[in-house]
Length: 152
Image (tube, rainbow, N blue to C red; front, side):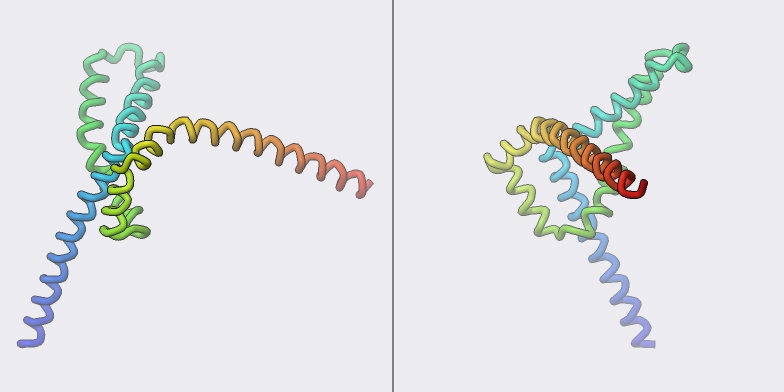
């Protein structure tokens, strides 16, 4: 009986410790997402998605107050849900200590510079990626033509 009680107590303590750690981890993920402006970007995306629906003729009779109230509700509830979803992902790859270091980096001048320039870098990278993809596609087509000629 004594062993059972000790085992249950150990499970309870470990469970409590895990939840406390989970809350701290979630707090760090939220801080990271705020620091990197990821949460703000998700809010912009919510607005974009709602605007797509708002602009659809099917929903032309829906009053503007509905869209404003709906967007406010989604923004209020989605932040917690998004953070929870990202906690699950990040937990596979980063420790609490990792996040503390990552957040500290993004608060440095060079980290801030990276965040500031990231949108332009992504835009440039997409342009390069498109060009590269076109070149690869052209190369594949050329090689396929050569292969087909060999088989004729």
